[in-house]
Length: 106
Picture 1 (cartoon, helix red, strand yellow):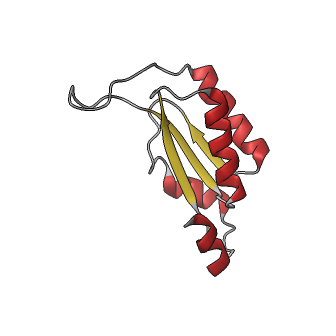
Picture 2: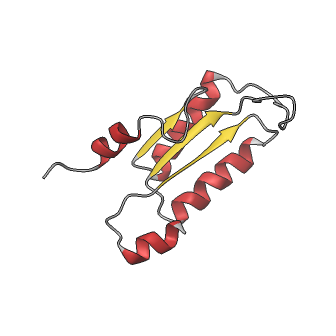
């Protein structure tokens, strides 16, 4: 879908996001980020999964602030225009701010 958007209009910004703490390995996170960049995704959010109830998938681990920062730095080096990465980041986290920082004013 992200690739299709860019084929349709390469000036449109695309955004994706995911949660950590579900048992993923660091190399899997980096591979996912690379796949998103390969699809020309512009904006990325990375947050901490928090188990909403006992009926939901259990939390496997809390991710450190340092690891979130490493993913942010890695994402920027990969070419994402903006990366919001932290334990309380959610998909819509500062979406307007990320958009304004990426889009030149008319």
